[in-house]
Image (cartoon, rainbow, N blue to C red; front, top):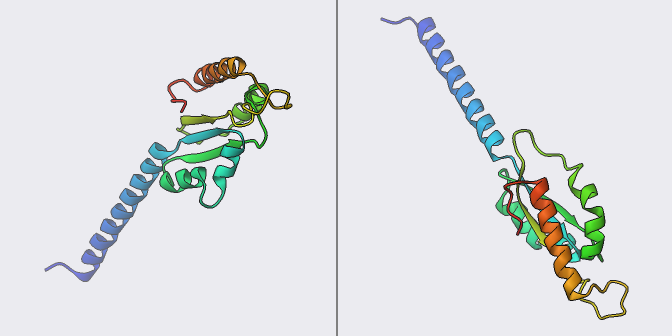
Length: 147
């Protein structure tokens, strides 16, 4: 017959191993899942963090898998974003073991205002600016798709 003390020792050892296994599994899952989805743009992106906005929905859909970071700036054009891009991307605090998984670049509403408006960017310049922004983001975050 096995004594009560021996059974208690076995139960305690089993519980300790189980807790350690759960803790290890959770830690590994957290490390594997940490990454950033970076959303860059104008007011359409900024407003995406409203309670029912598209950025808020991404945050909900990717909770505990990706940190969704909103870098939307009301009134900005491709010209303005190009000037401040390093200030947006360089100080970005990335989780340990994670990087930028993907980026969204949503601009053009302000660029497309009527000629003569201070925000207007001609279509040919808009295209050049967007290509330049995508290339810069791809260099800064290699392997992360720019959507």
